[in-house]
Length: 113
Image (cartoon, rainbow, N blue to C red):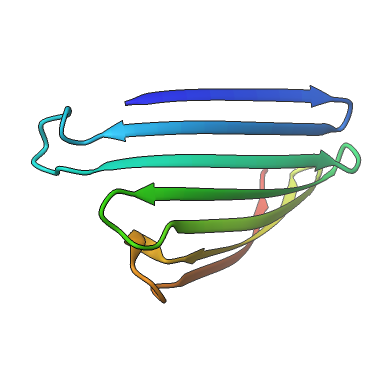
């Protein structure tokens, strides 16, 4: 497995990219395929309490006709001991299978005493 990543932050903006290559055959796990994943993300700190982010990931699976694609958004707000967070993620062609989609949305509220 090889992974290369790069991040950069300037003021309230942070960006990142990562490339991962997994050779399953070399890992002796019985699988004869490889997976190559590329990811990008960006985050913006609106102020000291509020931040938003977006990320996207694409995975090419050997032997599969479709690339797996995942994207998501998140937002977080905190004030004192209270945090409100939400995210929404969507995946298409999961496992390299066409029309295999998943979605996940979550909202959480937490209190620290």
